[in-house]
Image (cartoon, rainbow over all chains, first blue to last red; front, side, top):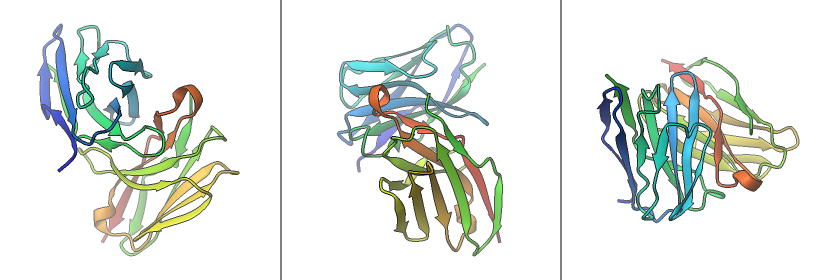
Length: 113
Length: 113
């Protein structure tokens, strides 16, 4: 079955560490997105990519980095520069990012310990 | 920055009633609109898309779009306790933000038996 797989489901990070969240899709979608969700704040866009080897910053890109070397994969690295990383991270993909809605992965819940 | 506003809620309705969820958006030229349902602790799930003025029905769900007034709504008929969730309104960006979805903060719906 086609879909988006995010891993791990839960992740714990120590202060000063970089961590990488995985996002893989087999839907043959061109566009992929990373969102962060905090209680009461809705979904905030971190980065997005509409084609391989290209990506754009969203509204809260500071402290995060991404790569898009393959169509299927869009990993997100949360760096030590991100001071408040505890949140629910959602990866999504879309066929063209214009006429179709997003399909979301199941999310990664990141906690700083 | 695109604005998508939803009635703040929470909204509480009895089982069998009609739940009405409303959303307004700031960009008059917006063309594509979506409703997502998000259960607590889960990722958003696309339930409706609408592109033209008027109503679009899918089972117990009806999306309504009025571009002149810049609002989109979701009606849930014969509400069930399983409809209890947060409902997110989303609008596709245009121009330099084409391909981005802008989300409202969501309206929490509770359907009581």
